[in-house]
Image 1 (cartoon, rainbow, N blue to C red):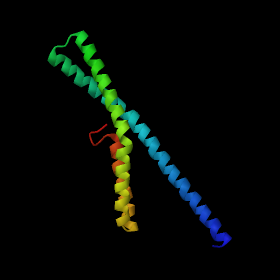
Image 2: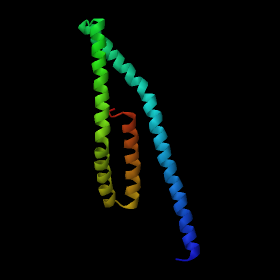
Image 3: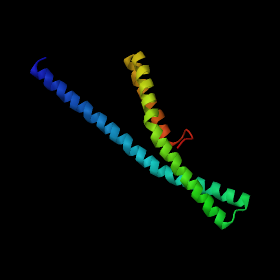
Length: 131
C-alpha cells in the first residue's frame, strides 16, 4: 500500500473509532439517565405495594419496620445476584449475536445490529418487566 493509501486508512480508522466511541458514550449516558429516571417509579410502586400489604394484614408499626427491613435486605440481595450473573448472561448473548451475524450478509447485519441495539435499549429501560 502506498504512503498516501496508509494515511487515508489511518484517517478512516480514526473517524470510525471516534464514531464508535461517541456511540458507546451516548448509550452509556442514556442508560444512566434512564436508570435515574426509572428509580423513582420503582420506589413509588414498592411503597404502594407495601402500604397495601400493611393495610391488608393489619400490621403494627413494629411489624412494618421489621418487614420493611427484610424487603430492603432482599432487594439488595437480588441486585447483588443480578450483578454477579450479568457478565455470564452478557457473554452468552454476545456469543449468540456473533454467531448469527456470521450467517448474515452485510445489509442483514446492519438491520440485525439496529434491532439488537433497540432490544438492548428497551431492556435497559426495564420495559421487559425486569430490573
